[in-house]
Length: 237
Image (cartoon, rainbow, N blue to C red; front, side, top):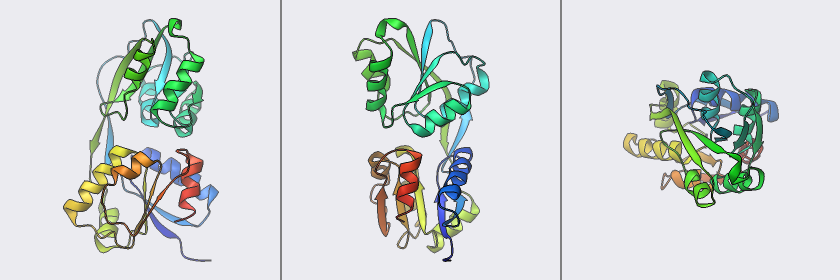
């Protein structure tokens, strides 16, 4: 059996651990995963206002975790951008539906499932959000309120990951979001990381674009922006 390939997961630590477990189940022994977060999740103070809210919009598993930690209600329908976010919401006790894609797909899902007159939609989000979900839905006649309950701050990926990146022995890097990809690419340039033998695997075209001109040996984009799509893409790495 070949030696496991070294895989850096540049998403936040909790989500990296969860994905690593799913990856090992799907592709046992294929990778040695190293948590290499370039973003840390920090809760923002303040209560969540649910007055008049009749539906929740989740665009990341981090939003689900932060919301579930401070709000006990689980009776509101949760519309989620993709399968990984929906799985996190279901695990937290919400009746969650996945749009299976991006912000445009989520807006389309909401339009099909939630009449504009049904009540306010609460977009649970971080300080940095990809895409204008509220703008899309507002233009379609929905009332959307934002709950900005966490921040996503850049951080160094950790000593083991840094050593692998500097000496060129990080075989695969997995990018799950445009912002984490951009932060990684900027750090790679600033730190003169050696990516000449590294394959980048991105969850979506947007995440791949975030990697910019980083000099990877090879770049792979998942066919679908889901956990299953990402695992299938990693199987090609």
